[in-house]
Length: 303
Image (cartoon, rainbow, N blue to C red):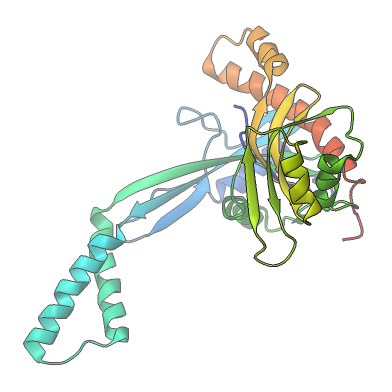
């Protein structure tokens, strides 16, 4: 149970709900499959999988959650083909042109006809609450998935005061400085990948992979005014990741020292393995997230 991407939200008020109370709240939005004519549903499912019942998995004060979204798959090509056939029948039989509004109404009818027979696809999104540190940490690569989970949690709790964390210094400016020759923190290693962009709206973008980032070529881009918007980093020889200018983390890897800790735990079963990895991961991220903010001048609390 290692998260692969991080979107982190700051709890702006103390989170005083116990894991048992949280369990009861999540039960009100328990996942259910799509009905016959529903496009999608979203609700909470057990983090430990289908054989488990608990919607909250707790360890060391951290509370793991899992949202499941199910969606009916109705290919647009199929819809368009059927709509075109029905429009042709109307225009040929009645000798008139089908206008846009009527065409949309036909498309809606076609979708309703197809939904009961459509295949379904489901996706699980994991997250955990860190009440002591004041974090909601979501394993999501896109803001849309993170927003959906946060919205579901807000509905379940009836309130969820969270905001994206901000720092006193712009991450893009600081990361640009590192490549331009500023002092690099001792617990960071800059790897061989970055993305550069001109600050202007729709400015040109340069993507570099498997390239020495302190080469003259990269320096020429910086001299031309481009800023770092993504940078591959390793922290303390324990975590590697790609950090973006919004403090989003992609392609997160927990390195050998942490993997070995998990391997040393004699879990005995899948649930025990899950719990061991969850414990190691959350304790490590509890160390890392405050340090991440420090790298950019500390957290800006005057939001």
